[in-house]
Length: 171
Image (cartoon, rainbow, N blue to C red; front, side, top):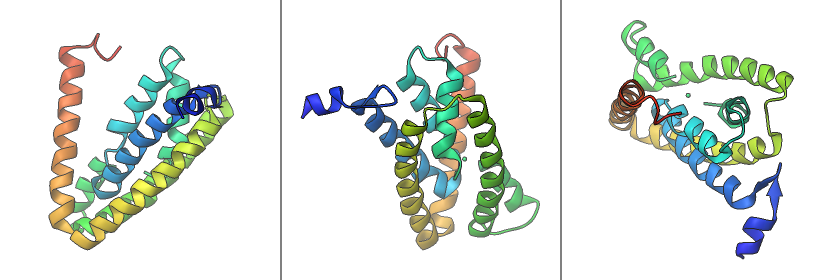
């Protein structure tokens, strides 16, 4: 079993590394479907998994699975400025994010900063995370979405704060 995870590769990455990326992408997509902010998890997952490979490859490959995600701040804007309820705001954000992410993905593909096999494998995990997370958001409505948005904002604050206080930690 262990040989299967180390000997088999996707784009030169051992299968166990790709599976860890898939776990991170699933969790990111689950959270993203409910409240946005999945990039807080998926981008660092790719950066860590890709190790010494230049960051544009990690971020480009992340974009393959993320192109159906990420928009916490846009959702807050929709709720406050447009007076939408959280479910409709989240839906509007997904449409806008899809358009911007597809444009970004096209740029990454044109620049050849993508390990397409790894990205497409992670995209399967992304679809699963989004499906489960959005189903939970639809069933639970605001009582699920609002606390998750708050959690995402807290995580984002911690990440930005740690980058300011410990810049060497994030490389």
